[in-house]
Amino acid sequence: LAENFSLYPQFMFHLRRSQFLQVFNNSPDETAYYRHILNREDVTNSLIMIQPILYSYSFHGPPEPVLLDSSSILPDRILLLDT
Image 1 (cartoon, rainbow, N blue to C red):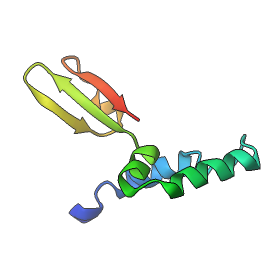
Image 2: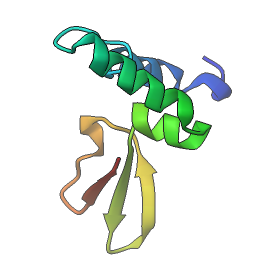
Image 3: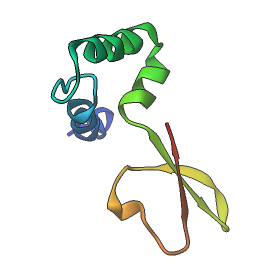
Image 4: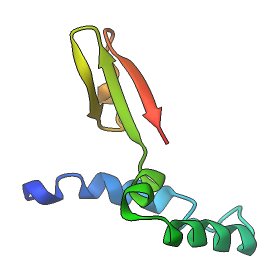
């Protein structure tokens, strides 16, 4: 994939697993509520609602965002999920 679309597959994975598209185990009212909230938010908040940001903190530098993946777990890192 091109550089612009490098995170697209991961984003679509999280979108498909989110409560915005999954209707199983939710009532129609809950589904309508979640979709309404998503439509009312701006783009930045909508993206965070679909795929939260995972920050990696270390003693050797400033925090940096990392992928929501098991490869982000390192022994000298502290992970913080911003939802």
